[in-house]
Amino acid sequence: MNLSFPAAEFTALLLASVRAAAWLTISPPFNSNVVPAQVKALLSVAIALPVVPSLVNKVPSLDDTAGLVVSVAEQVVVGTALGFLTALLFAAVSAAGNLIDLFGGMSLAFAFDPMGSAGNGGSGIFGRFYNLIAVTLLFVTDGHQLVLRGFTTSYNVLPLDGTLSLRNLEHLVTTGVAEMFLSAIQIAGPLIAVLFCADIGLGLLSRVAPALNAFSLGFPVKIMLTLGGVGLAMTMLPQAVGSLVDKSVKAVLEAIGA
Image (cartoon, rainbow, N blue to C red):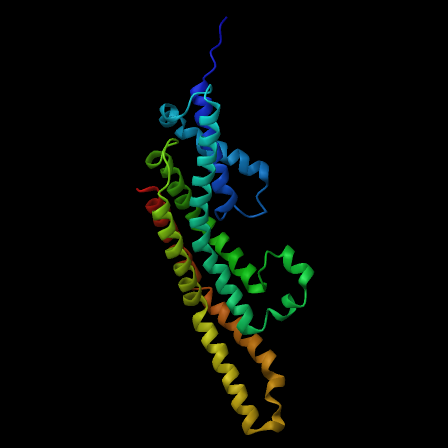
């Protein structure tokens, strides 16, 4: 009994899984440490399996070792670049939370804990809270399926023998950084303005009536305003996350030339 080994199919599955694994390592919501590495490996294979038939004719021969190594490196670069574009825009939510921590005085305890800062991923209280809410909203609104569909489109538009345009990628990264800062300011801007006005009011009150010691009330007042403002801002966060999902998918499609 002779058994034939599907070399082309196996090579296509391997290369497609490498691209998916590189993307899952960086792209939210799958880049979290909550998702084990074994699960990410299985997910990468699951993502690659449906597209293997369309990629069989785009793989190098198993006898071409140099071509295989180059192709693996190309898939890592493509997956990492697409994942970075997605993560760059979603970083706006965490950045907005960090701005609230800074202006609301919530980052003081975080600054006094240098050993714990490394384990917290460099984010304060509301930075981590906003990031957790954004990931939850991604799953609740099925935004993760839209992000995943945008990535799987890359196998059709940019097959295993295709490469990304570096000039186009440079433009998208530059635009993505600007979009990230703009989105972070739009999310946290109203609350930052309220906290800034509260600081001005406390400063004027301290000048008018020094005996009141207005700055002793500064922390309780700012904490109350921060918690109240964040509670109101939660109603607008689903819309902001939906907008970021659309922008990230468009950026990925533009990067692959779709």
